[in-house]
Length: 261
Image (cartoon, rainbow, N blue to C red; front, top):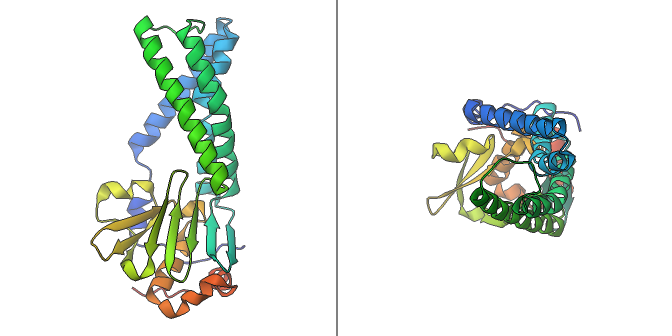
């Protein structure tokens, strides 16, 4: 689908940026993982290098997939049927997610076992060996849960719109918001910390709380089309019956949204 030329919400210029501190931490962590693995290879400890990279290096595949989608643009995955209009993240993210979790389960478990036995060339005290081993067992268990949740949901998450409600699903839970409970739709949350997820659509609820739906560029290129879609169907309840037939995808393809304030 060709990229729509829709205006970007005003506050995204600030909320859509990754903090410099986060970039620095990721860069330093990546360099450390790579260099420490190379040192193990240089020392002839190939098992240590393989287990080290598989456990601590594999998660960077998710970072790479995220950057590829965020910078290069999402390959839109949208479906519409009688149950509603559903958006799923770019398939590159889903593939990276399953690969990372599938590798982490055995890799983290093996790391924990070998480290506790002192069979890895990692300089640490006996007490730290035990503590880190427990942490990696927990990581392996978390990866199992995340992998099972991803298989059950058919991916790393989705956004679904029906005439009556909005479903926001990630790998751990599904949040449901009724259209009738939404009193405003904004492009930034009132709490600064809630904007750390990047470009988002914020659903202001009748009870005074906010539901932040972040990561919109992971579903559609640049994310603006999805923001305006949500705002359009909030402002025009008479159009919501389109969400269960072919009219909503057509409106999305044409960018036919109410862009007024």
